[in-house]
Amino acid sequence: MTKINENFLKLQAGYLFPEISRRIRTFQAKNPDANIISLGIGDVTQPLAPAIIEAMKKAVIDMGSVANFHGYGPEHGYDFLINAIIENDFKNRGIELDKSEIFISDGTKCDIGNIQEIFGIDNTVAISDPVYPVYVDSNVMAGRTGQANQNGQYDKLIYMPCTAENNFLPDLPDTEVDIIYLCFPNNPTGAVAPKEVLSKWVDFAHKNKAIILFDAAYEAFITDPDIPHSIYEIDGAKEVAIEFRSFSKTAGFTGVRCAFTVVPKQLKAYTKDGRALEVNPLWNRRHCTKFNGTSYISQAGAAATYAPEGKKQTRQIINIYMSNAALIRTSLTKLGYEVYGGVNAPYIWVKTPNGLSSWDFFDRLLTKTRVVGTPGAGFGPAGEGYLRLSAFAKPESVKEAMERFTGV
Ligand SMILES: *Cc1c(COP(=O)(O)O)cnc(C)c1O
Image (cartoon, rainbow, N blue to C red; front, top):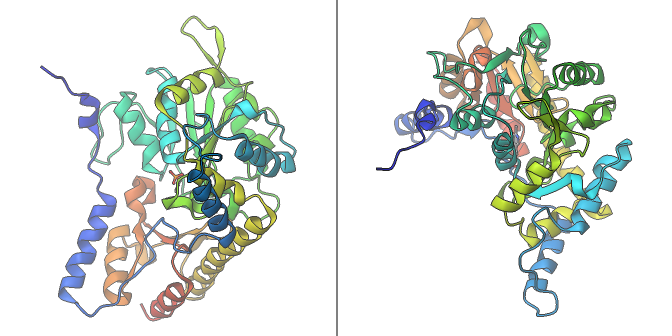
């Protein structure tokens, strides 16, 4: 008799996006002519930069020749990409990394979902509320939590509420925690962490022998020069943090797939009897056992984002999204909304007016403006009373959406 992993039964139904689709379908059925604009998506809309297309075409041609064919590549990625990452993403910011500390993959979702496998089941995990659901669900599946309560919050997880009162920056837990998920620039709130905030977390991790899992998928959207792009810009962070980066949002790779994870050699975790062991070899073992490398074509495309033309072109695309973000911010501010984010992140976190619930505001916007956002409550209880608007839509859609907001 086959037993299932009963941890999966604790998972809450994937409620948010199916429910949004259901409400849109119902509305569209009643209003077949309604032209609905979605600012709800977390996916990019601009095509890949021409330099990336050229690099990928060349890689495809390579695959068709005996001399340049590529079969299985190294599990942790090709040197041409790893070297470009080290030079451009880290050395430029004063961070020295060794090739063995970078693991190329096909996505941050997989990496940040998988990383918990190398840590014991009895670690206490702290996450922000609201949160990117992958951090939570991967720990539920592994059995690191109890059951969910009626708010959808799991027993044994430590939730760190992020609201306007704390600038959407989680307070340090007052209990002992072993693993901390941080995401800056943040999805969904658009908040960023200044140096002193990250330093506080690095100190906390040192004191508690804890590890920070730092999701930097949106670092390329930072415009303020004082905001760190990498947690390793903080002294001592290499001893306590793993960083996740992705080409998905920074270079439009959501459909191409390429990302990487940084596991510094200095990072240690502990056996039950207190022996300190390096984490890097464990992740290396896990990665090489369960992953067979990212496609050569994807990696060639990713490497092109670091060459001068590719850099310039991907920057232009990011600027399109950030102009969208600026337009959303200024339009809504002018209309009297309380808005957060959108300066160093492609998400705008809007306080619902007159104390409306997230879903009531969602419905009101859909009915009155035919604009779709993402109800903040879907990302966790502390997201109640907010709505996420994404700057990843096409500029003309954003412009039209903002015009429709007038008079809601
Ligand atoms: C989009 C996103 C990612 C990127 O995931 P990929 O699997 O690399 O596409 C990672 N973290 C957050 C918070 C995201 O929103």
